[in-house]
Image (tube, rainbow, N blue to C red; front, side, top):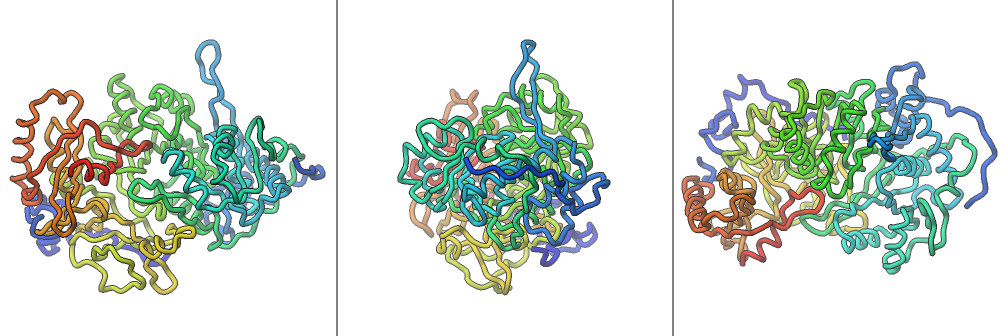
Length: 614
């Protein structure tokens, strides 16, 4: 999606010449932008010993750059083969397998060459089992060495992995799996027990593979498919626009939908990540979200699989995460805001420093400046926390670092400007269009908002999914055709300051539409969150637009549960009355614990709160 360079950063001199209503965050007295309310068992192959022919210089120090620059590749598996040819004996994946009598962690690993060859062997087995190019294949395996081997074996055959976040709950997950119309199923024994309990959701599946022991079901075992001598596997020469995977959205703000990923999208994501974060040689990553770990082999990075349940990061044992960072010399970590908060609190309590970490990447839910500040205390001065913004359908779209957040944009967030998510990634188009709830078929420049007004964020580029799997109505609502390209409507609202930075103001379907105009969740909630007794707040609307009544729901801090609620209510109403943005909010309700998503413990289910607040 290398279209045009979007919104380059302006110089300070140019920013100073902006109209006063541009309201850059450097001038907080102007208040946030927008409207007046912001005024202030198959046959074995013959033995083979031929080496796969690398497409890059085997003496190169890293295979990642060559793989990224190879314009002929349209399959991420080629990147693994390139890296394996350049750095064959470097560790690709490291996995904790147990502890000795002294409590020391024992690890096993695969080198890049081993990962490439094991996925070759398994690809031959999958092909003989009929799991070939275009076959939609449910993949349900916990983080492990086999997870990496399986995924790259599927890419090599050209099969289409179907991946659903188990953190969304069994019923929603089953609905997603049935919607994908899978033809093959690969999973651990627990996953096969599930498919036996709910057979109606898997009527289209004809090929079954079990990781581990088969119990009372038929099909192949993983061992039977890869128990064969190694021979190089001819990687499927897939096209850039050919379906590579179906990844279901979390469904936290509506029905989960299957985003169709193409091979070109995966290559685009790897390219943007490599270029933006400037990963150096011999980087070691600790990816606490399995899907992000799959980028590591293509980037030439060692992936250390953490000892934790990735569906419950807020419950992870911080000692085990810290142990992995220290013992493996981790230089890069991906962690959700919930895990960062847990690690930050643990580190502060034990006066820890993590000197090997060069960067931390946090996404999946809004990352508050408070969490960034907390975890930054564990890092060396030149290390930084990056918070890329995007969605399953378009990731990463923008990014900002902790140094800029803590030194500059945090004060704007606290004043109700929204949450700054940074500038567009190089080579991507990120724009703001007028807020509308109906489909938009064709792009028109008249859609763009004027100045710094709040609009819907739209993204165009090589990381954007073009459609949802067999969801034409959802596709029509989320996509805008612009010639041969597609804009994805993020469903998020925001504005852009004079430095080209995007400020996130909340989900479009969470805005409250009153007789006096719209209210936006993130800016309004920031005002109430300043009170020390408030853990978090949530703006909801009661009634029918455009005559909704705004209600602010308050979850007090646990240590503030015994506070006088009437006194707290008076103080919060005074907060609201002093700010033109929130003066219309006169109804406050206290809630003992907001309904939130399981994985991040951060995405508030405002629809449920709105029903409760009636």
